[in-house]
Image 1: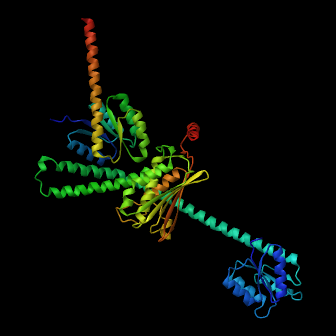
Image 2 (image 1 turned 90 degrees about the vertical axis):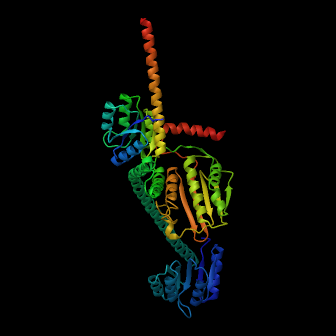
Image 3 (image 1 turned 135 degrees about the vertical axis):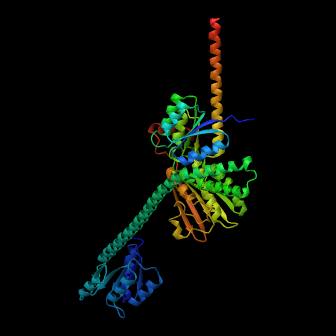
Length: 398
Length: 147
């Protein structure tokens, strides 16, 4: 109740200030307005209060008309009307027009306080519901994205599987022809160089396609994750070191902000390194010359959070939901496979973590990866889990 | 120096792939026999000498692992290299535990494939050589005992 904001509207200044004084003794602060017009002015110029207590009979605009205006323009504000003893029909009329309730004058102070309390509770319930609805919508959206990604992933890996075989056929055919061209009997073959050139192009094209299929299928494998103790600081430094040259080319500064309280975690260092390289690489690509990239490492309860923040171009809203989809890329063809973030997300999911992003066009993007301190692969048996837990505990205690 | 051809048996249900890889390996001087399923593979091994089998894991009917077991049971000296797709990398490891020489991811790099096949072949030759020497020793001892 301390935070509740009230506006008293009455043409009798003495009455208003008396009420305001008594309310303030209860810890409720109230603003005052001497007329409906003054009230509307107040509403226009400052944040609308939670509850307006208004007299009905006032010179100029009366309380009922004021009520209708408030209902129309400030739907989140509740109105309690004060009616004269002789005109209860005003109160009924007010409720019909959307007032929370009415009280008759002369005013019983306790009644007013309890009405205000009820109105405030109604507002809180409404806001709670609104928050719930927003949350529910967000969750539903998240689920749609997750399902979409899952089905796209299945589709993409299926396609990759099927494409591998014809790819192998093309590769062997081209390779065979190249061998034939090297034979002595063909030393004098006309336009031999043209054939060699074309075969070279076929070979590099196949190589490009092969990289895509391997990348796509790479993270689908379930069993070959090797879990071990991971020093994230070291791993992040190492990953940044690997892409240092590209950053230097664009004169980008990579900063490290590592919290010393982060302990080692139990995870898959090789896959995590791929995740970090992907994220830092993306940041470098998105950042213009002389930009800045910040890599942050923090403990967060039982989890650790890794953030990669850039001062790049940012991601427009319409791309935010699609960014983890396979083959979604804003780079030119051949430059990016559109699989980096898809694979990244797949790895993080598998390692029991989550990835989120925040982005502002023109300002930059932050990718946050949350990883659990311990992670177990689903396939692992209870037995080996226990024994490894013990091992890990002894490592930590040392 | 004249190259002694390696006798390779290439087993995969993907006909075009078998044909093209056979031709390519043939061009480098190896002697390649194609087979399109597990049964065919075993039939050929029964009739012809083979040094190295290049065996696809995913095949309809008898799969690569079953074929591998059969080969190791009946022709233990023949070396086997498994060809795997991405989803079957674990199966490849299982194959190596069952006696396969090595495995390759599809589509495999040609030089890689040749190198592994050559190494497998060499191992088989050395193995056979040792067997011959052991047999000779045994024979000497036996004949020595008679004399």
